[in-house]
Amino acid sequence: MMISKTNQIELRQLRYFKMLAEELHYGHAAGKLRISQSALSQQIKLMERQLGSPLFDRFKKKISLSEWGQQLYREATKIITQVDRSMDTLSLLREGLQGELRVGFVASAMSSFLPTVIQHFHHSFPSIRMRLEEMNNLAQLEALENGDLDIGFMRSNQIGQNMELMPVLKETFTLVLPKGHPESRKGFIDFRRLQSEDFILFPNTKSDFYFQQIVNMCAAAGFSPKITHQAIHGPTIFTLVACGMGISIVPTSLAKSATERVETVELKDITHRTQIFAVWKKNQDQLQIERFLSTIAQHVTMLTPAT
Image (cartoon, rainbow, N blue to C red):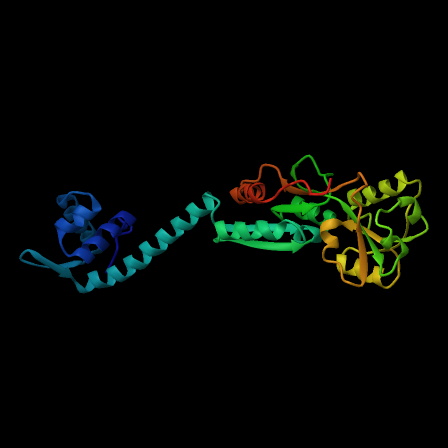
């Protein structure tokens, strides 16, 4: 079978041929293709001239696939199936229903609202593949800038002019104390009684906005915190506190995952609040981000119950 280089077969012709090969009746095939029977006949004859071989054996008013026709039918089926699958994929991508969404988050986001959002988003858009990575604020901003993340959830609103942000969660702080610490039995904490304590905090370089909030709380009580240890993961902070290495202040959502080896006191009467923000790069042509933000709006109550 030789195909003319100047008159190559078109996809439309392959669809015509495939339909006729399956129906083996010009009238039925033409009806399903919504073209006239004569137009279908002309296209089949043109294909046969282009290929230099008969595609159908004709006997009186009946037709059947020739040897060349059987071979072309197998190839045409593969080609059409692949083209249709590719077009469906492109359509889903264009509509934001397929692809990949890369999400960065601080640990406390996974301790609060994020699991619910992930669950509902995955249920609504199962064809969108999600890649999740726990990262501190600074690492998320760098990844967003470099195009390695699509959206991040961080405890900072200090972002570049090329970024967008949306507040997602606002909550109280919680004091984390070693088991049996005197302040744990007194309920409300007077911050002035903490000025001699060793503090275990998130590093300033990794979460400067959050770090500054802790400093401001202490400053309002008239002292600067004595920071003796730093850690970027909640479990590490809880372990250090349990070992008697100091006390810590963490978001209330993160404190819920604290071990029984420590005691926690929610600072409801302290006016300071910490927030988680959704951050993404401006002018990103990704409907997945919009759909993810919409899922957040539907399933997350932004303000914490403690005010």
